[in-house]
View 1 (tube, rainbow, N blue to C red):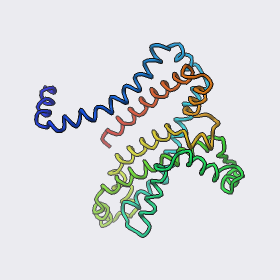
View 2 (cartoon, rainbow, N blue to C red):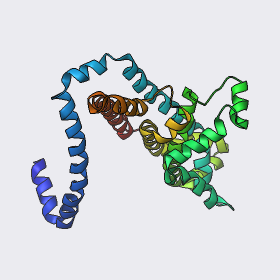
View 3 (cartoon, rainbow, N blue to C red):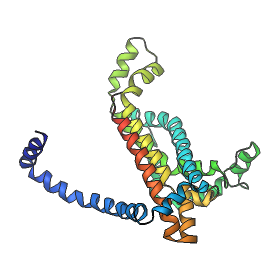
View 4 (cartoon, helix red, strand yellow):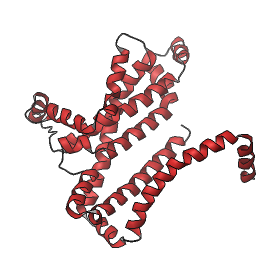
Length: 269
């Protein structure tokens, strides 16, 4: 029955079918690239894959990648939700400039971002030196990784949250206010729940972007090694035989995590 419905839909929308087939090319390109890597590792080099499963350095680097990206996403949410709400609800002088600054990390090369962060947060820098005096070190530390991931990933969250707040009719907040709710109460009980799907989607994309980061991280915090840094190191020292299994493990873990997040975001809130 389902097959018949799909067939009828395709007959009624021939242009959509053509567009789908054209778009399928890019999907096949991605699938072929990943399948080639996974096939060569899991079927032709299974022993090497088993070895990296028992390699503490590999497991530690992947865990560190997931954890630091989670922290960066959490910070982006805490700081980004208020900013996104103001941008969605108000027009003011300089708004476009602020929105441009939000999008800058998406545009500039990430090695440039890493150099800029290193200059700001290194131990001899004014801000980096201050944080070091209170026990927070960015240079070659976990917090440097978090800072780099936050810098490159926060635009994805802020823009998604802004779209979510913009999709909520402001009149709903006004009705809540006329019924006696404070502005904060209207936000937390009306606007925020109605925007949660966009916020979750933005958080997923922000986390995924943090996991994939390399250029900014390697400049400010080569150590401790996240997964992408370790893969490059193993590639330079041992070639594909050493780096390929780690890449496959990271792909599998990211795919499972990303799929779980996506399925969770589809649930009715």
